[in-house]
Structures are given as structure tokens and as C-alpha cells.
Length: 269
Image (cartoon, rainbow, N blue to C red; front, side, top):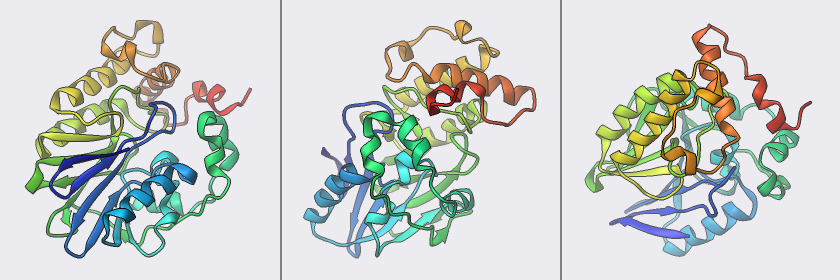
């Protein structure tokens, strides 16, 4: 569903909320369109792309906020666009996709991977930079080591992408919950209207709740039973709690491998 956010700024809202169901940002300028994240691929990206093409101007740029497949799986749909990402996103997209793993982790959208066409990053972003007269790409971290967010200063909008999930638990199996929570302070500073990678458009208050959740995962010290209570108890994907709590505790102990609690989500015994 395409939702107007501000003049020249819209979001394609992924519905219903759940594993692998993400949003895409659209910014229209004189020379064409910038798309922020490309959904998981397949019919979900195709529906979004059709709505974008109906606006009129061509898609000139794609900005990827993470290397995780729900944000990049559809990048191949925009074959003529320049693709912007961090060096980590670029390195991950240069690797063969793990289609079987994707299907197990995202069973509700498993059919979206049948015709996945990968796209490589063509422009690496290392510092905050104006990509066009309207948008700034801003490096950040937490969901992975090198994320991006996109600021539209004239509209007061921030496309937080993978850095924010409203109404859905984030998944930090290769992230850093503590660093992620701290980095969200900067996201709040960039604009009043926050477009998350998952869930409805929100504000700084919604980002603050994500920070509380991530810090609660850290404070649980490896025991998901000690995860504090909060609004996240009503969020989708409760199965991510154990992964996030375990990951935070492992990082505190200097261990950066993927948490064992991810194995059931990947269908591994």
C-alpha cells in the first residue's frame, strides 16, 4: 500500500506485519525517483515497483539500509538504477544468496525467492553525503555493523529502514543491540517523521520504545525470562526475543558468532 508522507515523499507499507514483510521509501525529484530498500522480492517487490512506475518519473537510485534479504531481495527489479550501500552491504551482496535459509527463516513469504535476481552495490557510502538536492545518506550501525539511513531534510522525514521496526520485534542475530540502541539517538535527531523498515510511520517516541526494547535485551544478561515488560510484548515475532537476548550476552562476553537460538528459526536441529 502506497502512503503519502510529505510532498514528493511516500512509503510503500508492507502488510501484514511479520517476518520478512518490510517497507520501501519513495522520494520523487526533478530527475527521477529514489527508492529506499526494495522489499524481499517476488510479487511483493513487483507490486511496489508498479505503484512507483505509475507515479511517472524513472527510478534513478536505490539506497539499501541493510544487507538482510527483506530489504534487498528485490533490488534486481530496478536494473537501470544506481545502487547505494555501505561497504559491508556491498560485500554481503557479492556473496551467493542462501535461498534455502531464506525460505526457512521467512516461511510466510517463501515463494518470493523463486526468481530472485541479485544486484550489486554500484556506489559505496562511507560518510554522510548528499545523494541528490533532496536526500542525504547517513551511515549508522547496530542492525548490522554498517547500516544506512536516508534523511529528507526539507520534509523532516527520515527513512530509518532496517534500523527501526515499529510493531515488530527487530532481529539482531548479527547486530549489536547495545550499539543499535545508542545509534538510534542520531536517527531521532535527523527528522520528526520516522519511516521504519517495518511497521507504520512514526515519531521519536516510537524510536524510543525500540531503544527501550534493545536495552532490555542487553539487561536480560542472556536469560530471555528476564526480558523486561513493555509495549514490545504486543509486537509481532516474539520468537526473536531469545535471539536478541542471547546475541547481546554473547557480545558482552566477546563472542561474535551467530547465536545458537537462531538455529531453530533456520530449520537447523
